[in-house]
Each structure stands twice: as C-alpha cells, then as structure tokens.
Length: 268
View 1 (cartoon, rainbow, N blue to C red):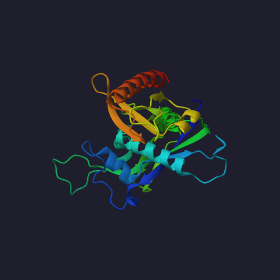
View 2: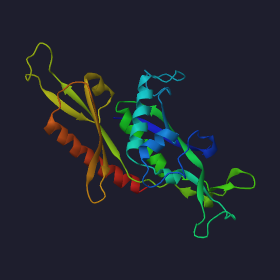
View 3: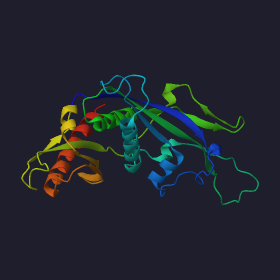
View 4: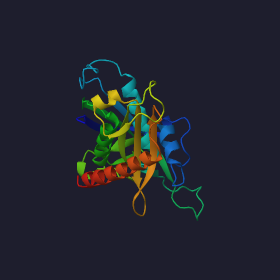
C-alpha cells in the first residue's frame, strides 16, 4: 500500500454565547465525551481526495462519496475513542467575588469559549486502504498540535490570545487508537456449492486487491489502563466469508499494528 496523506489542524474559537444551549458550567468529568463533542461540533475532520491522488480523483472535482464516507468514519472514531477531552478545549474565566456571594462560596469559574479543531486531510497518493492512512495522519497531526494561550478579557468582553509561541500549550491526547483494515478475497461463486470456494484475508490491501474483494473489515483497538489493548470498533461490509477464528487473527494483527504505531508516534 503506497497511500500517502498530509494532515493539518486549524483551531478556531467558538464563543459560549454563540451556542444556543451550552452545557451548564462547561463540561464535567462525568459528561459523555461523545455526546458533547458531537453536540458542539468541536472536532471537524475533512478528507480531500480531489487532489490528483489517483486517476479517479481529479483536481477540482466536488467531494465524492468516498471522501464523505472517510470523513464520517474518522469523525465517529474521534468521538468514540475519547481521544481529546472537552476540558482541554475550553477557555475558562474565574469571576471576581461580588457582594451577593455567600461567605463559604469559592470563586466561580465559567466557560467562555471552546476551541474548535478543523482537521484537514489531503490525500496526495491513493493506492488503497485510504482509511488507515488518513487515520494515521490525523493521529500524527493531533500529537503535534499546540494551542495559543487564550483568556477572557472582562473589560473588552472578548477572547484574547497571546502571540508568543512560548505561551502555547500542547494538546494532550487521552489515548492512542490504532486501526487496521483487511480485504477478504474469495473464489466462492454462484456456480459453486457453499464451502467449495477458498478465501484469503489480505491485511493493508492496495488498490488492485481492493478491486478484487467484496468483503472488508476494519479493526480499531485502544490501549487498556493496565496492559494490552481493547477492541474499540469493528467495521465490516460485504460478504460473509470471515468467521470467528479469522476475526480473532485480524484482532491480533490489529494489536500488533497498535504496538508499531505506539512506538513510532511516541518517538516524535
């Protein structure tokens, strides 16, 4: 697979006053990460294939179904994996004490704005397995993302940002999900009885292999708190060739893929 992607992250400020129904007092530790991210739209991935990356994707064409499907799958995995905490995307302000405050009340902290991350993925060479390459580019880009120091100015009633790079803070990632896709090639046909055909599982298929396969599988795993990995997501489409034993092999290979990704990304 010779697919290559480039990913960049743009951050914009979403004022809490512009949200019709903002969360009360901002996100809490017990808030559902997926619901909050999807409700506020804080993570906005976009996959662009119309870059001349392949003869089927000429420059200037509108986004096709494949690009939209990839954007949707990446967005779903971002939300389900708890990759980024909503607390790390908040801009908070501690209100000064007033005469109406009770003596035992501490300072009140409110959320004035959120960071919205626009994640742009440009495919510069497409030779199959577009999702794995795009997801790897997203992880690498988010791991290198820094946000400027921002605060609420009560006098101006606006968010101000420091121009100093030394004041910027690195965006922490809560986990490191890895994905591995498979294609299942089968010789089964309508002219053969069930069980007479043979099948092969192809890991990280290229474009030629994908065109010959009808059944695909993507396994996403995340590290456990203790040791090892846990299954985060299984995406399967087309056919019914793959069974339990084959699925177990695919999961083990996905766990090996996570070990490789973890060693590579942690060294960056």
